[in-house]
Length: 142
Image (cartoon, rainbow, N blue to C red; front, side, top):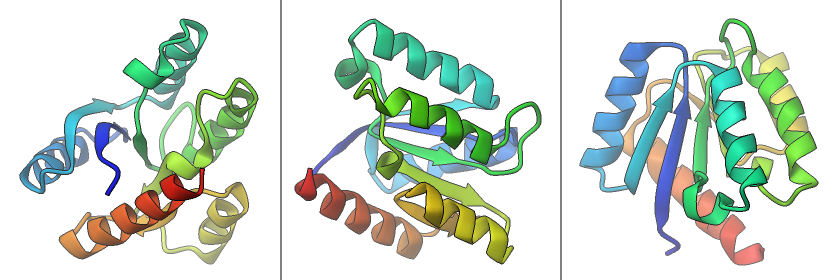
């Protein structure tokens, strides 16, 4: 099973970030977990490590992305990621849409963006096992 060294949680809800950090640590999912509450800030971080050529060493292996955030929402973030994909730094298959939205339109949009998974909050052990299975299956295809 491919290990996940770094996880990035992008969610404007501080409580959700804290809970996810605790959950992921308790499940022994990853060595490093970073939470960023602003999608613009997260995108700037990803661009920076991409431009430095240090994405493999410093970039996240998996991203949990909330949809409903101020300034830049999750779908706007995905549009910007499309620009980064050309640089080989990040691919949407490493992104899990992690949201409270059950809206079919959001689910369909996420599917069209080709994200790894669409997960309704909160994270559970069952959901995390499904994410890990998809992540590892996707990693073996690359």
